[in-house]
Image 1 (tube, helix red, strand yellow):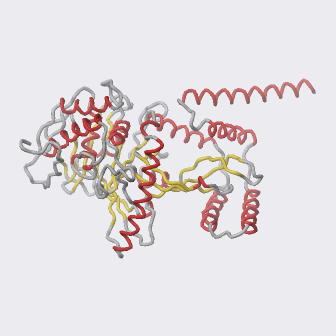
Image 2 (image 1 turned 90 degrees about the horizontal axis):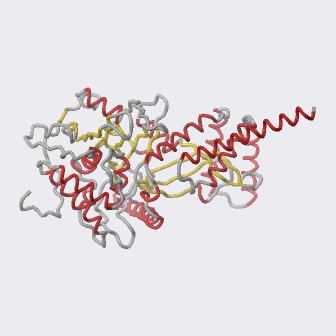
Length: 493
């Protein structure tokens, strides 16, 4: 790369299957596979995040620029077809350590590294619109905008389709919230969360944009498959990853709807049974086929043609993609609009909304500062699944009807003009609630107590072990109370 500007980003080389050009795997430093896999998945064969490698327009942290320089050096080397040494990889790790990433040379979680890397580079958030549906009184918190660095997809029992996992997180996720009920008192109610993607990327903070408005011309969708539960043992359920996915239902549509497709770009796989052990590799996909990046493999990056099902012809690669995939990156691709003028006008409206989300995130602190580890997220997701498994379900048809009526009521809510109409809606809610069968009283009380305590401690929970002990203590107190009441009744008899 002699003569090249060291602060410029090398473009992705245009090559075909028969081109003699060969990518080179990154050099392996001690336990650096998670670094190599993440970098090759995010930056090497596509340029969606190239703006993160360039110097920003405004002020920047000096340590961040050291990281940016080290990362750009690695990416440029790979794109140029030259070998990247272990010392170059160590420069990236050293820069991340300076910025607060764990300093040891033990195996780290690739999703943890990804979140920290894009946070330190001030990457755009994935902007989402969230809405809650429930049977209680509507609340201003039922609609909000949120920004995510990484979208976690919990694995579902015996489910192997990536699309179903998406539908669960975007449309079918159940949770409990505190809202004002029919007795005008706050109570814990079941809710369904509905998410849609705002199809505009945000450069950075409004007013002092560190990147030009058009720097990110596509939206990158980072997903993580929650393969590790409380015991940190791996769930190797094979998940099929479509090369293209119709994303229309997941996108917030404007008055001039566009067609959206999600295209698979790369996969980071963890080869091993435990999160703290094993080896990370990555796979990238383009028109030439699949490439496997392995910093402990051969120097030249291997290339495989795709089979009829879109997967590599190499059976081992296919197994590692289906059963070991952990971090998955898609690119959101919009089609041409029927009315370009109106479409671009709406795009700027969506962009302003996305910028608002980014500003709120900047003002409230980074996701990285708030999330202690992605392992905690995975454990919490597993705990939520276990708790939901304990709950007795109301009659399915009735629950479905209540949900549909709740959705319709939200659509009608803005049309309510006076208190009389609102009172009618409340009366209808009361009649519907009267139809619901009650779960066992003892179980309902326990669930309500657990939910109430969790809501109070929502921002105070420091670790799951302490939380589990508290729940166990409350359960033991309930058992003791029942036993004492039973003994008292026996004595009185």
